[in-house]
Length: 248
Length: 331
Ligand SMILES: Nc1ncnc2c1ncn2[C@@H]1O[C@H](COP(=O)(O)OP(=O)(O)OP(=O)(O)O)[C@@H](O)[C@H]1O
Ligand SMILES: [Mg+2]
Image (cartoon, rainbow over all chains, first blue to last red; front, side, top):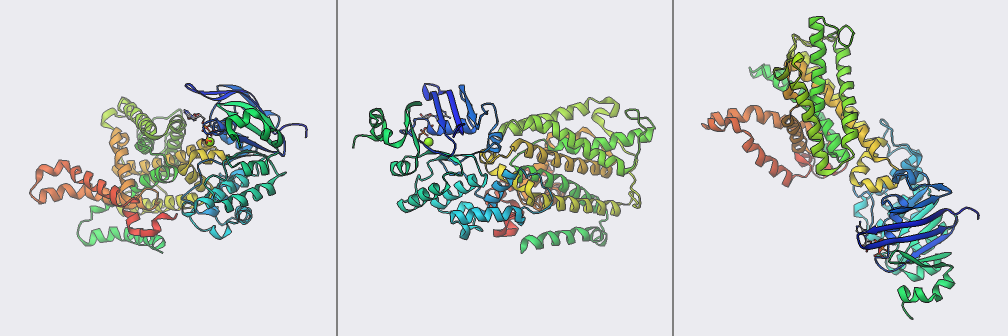
């Protein structure tokens, strides 16, 4: 693999005295699952927000698929192939599950400016959306309001929205948070199945999941990258143990 | 079920109103009904912004008044036989009304482009400010009557219709309301409407899916402005008179109240809102007088405020939502 999917150089972000990104250098290789771990408040979510364009870094560059995207708006980055999920579930609660995904399919195709024909019954939107729901095991819930789903199901829908974009880099902010062990295991298997379709930047506190999935692990502490490498080296890294993994 | 039936019942009632007015011996009421229908057009277009786009505009009268002034000014030039921008003026509705729609849409494009950078209370205030700017612009236009406004000698003629006949004009306005509702109904269920509603629910999430929220909201703003422009042109024809009052912020407030009263995000609700608001405006003062409280006559709004609060508290989707019951939630 020659060109990395994502590369960050000299990224800085501060909130007053809080340093959320401290001169970050990071690369996500094409097709890999790159896990980003670190204690609460380390700056993981803030980093995803900077990559997706919701927050502007104080300084530094972001390159995506060889292109500098630092100045692009959120929707432009998404159209370039960046997909993300949110730590706090963010789905369209007033839409039913199917319409949530239909919206995402429509957004990917860049076809929002239709004024006459009903979107819901359009097979070119509905079929791919149903397909994704089937993949996620949500098809039985297609007609239910998204707001009426259980927490775990909303997490799945959250992921379905991102997948409908067919992203080239998928950023997942704690996809397993609040899930039971069984749902968590299913999610791990599901993400394993996605491997190769797109690169992933995975933020997750569940270490079993991280070590099961990641090709590379980077560790963030107070906005600083304190280690980055294959799982085996991270597991034994002294600094990481101290900062995060604890001694066990 | 109710969602399909109520609009049809409403249409039937509106169709019956003129003969009914004659039958009860109050034929002048047709004029009140026409006013209701025209304001209903303005209110349903504002609901596109508030109820489907999450944009609480407090300046809708700007586009309403602009549409009215386009009609008034062109008709004035035609009557005085003065050219307008070097072109001979016409009084034909088929030319003037589309122009009114176009000018209002263009103004909405500019105002929307500048206002949509803000949100929440700032958006409310900035749309209000732009509308007031236009209001003062027309107040200062001595050439077109300034404060006093501008008379129109007769309604803009439309081929095949006797515009001076109040019944014909009423049914024309009603037909246009139906067309506007039909267009909006298609629109909100089409791709555009879905995107717009998604932005209302969560702008950041929609943007993360690749949706340029500004483009969609601005388009909606233009469409709503165009609709208000049409309503304004009709109002100019109805009154035979245009004045800066048509752009005043209180009128924006009135239209807003119609939307809230009828039901935000219910498409047909604001029509009901216009009916109730204008009926109260017309009859509450009389009722106060009849009840031996002439002092309240000028202050019919004292009843109105509490009524509005009750509705907002108890019927989230307004009176129409109350009628629809559970069905109000699905579009
Ligand atoms: N908008 C903001 N304004 C001020 N401070 C912020 C803002 N966003 C984040 N922070 C601060 O930046 C630091 C990093 O926050 P961030 O949410 O990125 O952490 P995180 O690594 O995702 O933590 P967690 O594991 O708890 O999700 C925290 O100290 C947080 O309080
Ligand atoms: Mg976080």
